[in-house]
Amino acid sequence: MSDEANKIIGDAQTRMQKTLEGLSHHMAQIRSGRATPSLVEDIRVEVYGQNMPLNQVASIAAPEPRLITVDVWDKSQMQAVEKAIQKSGKNLNPNNDGSLIRISLAEMTGETRKEMVKLAKTKCEDHKVAVRNIRRDANDALKKLKGTSVSDDMIKGFSDQVQKLTDDAIKKMDDLFAAKEKDITTV
Image 1 (cartoon, helix red, strand yellow):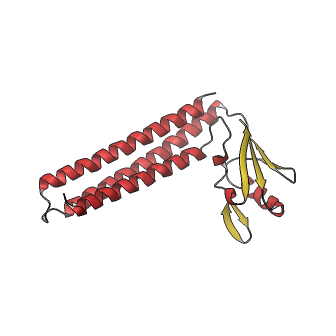
Image 2 (image 1 turned 135 degrees about the horizontal axis):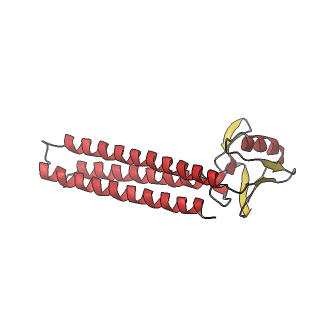
Image 3 (image 1 turned 180 degrees about the vertical axis):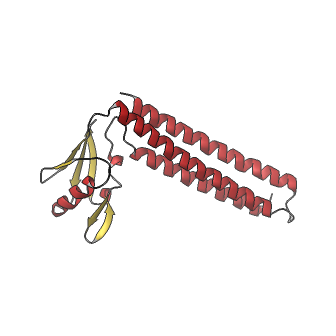
């Protein structure tokens, strides 16, 4: 076994895992029928002269299926948080009562559900392309080992390992998408 080939395969596996985690994070941010804190936790808020994610300036909860509450730790920053939620592009309308921000989510229509499924599918396809690019990079690196202490048969074996990693990652992505699609379409 070639240490260089194992390093290439290990690197490809790590990169594919990070891509899978990225897809999982994106799927959590796509709205389904229920409220979840992940819908708003990444919204950037301008506080203390810095641009910070909402989950670093407030506690976020979903006490009801269609309600998200944001408890800002520094009450002087309530207006900034409210503005950031409004301008997030997520079509959210926060209600600030001075001590807590409530975000009521409207019932999703059939049209909205279709758009959310389409968005999830697009995100999934984008991440699949990234995994395939990682596969290509790994196979190119393996081919460069040809002529050193690695034979053509060994390169073929290593390429098969990379293909198996790719197939596994894409299967997991398809499973993530299927679960999200079911979550979105279930009324």
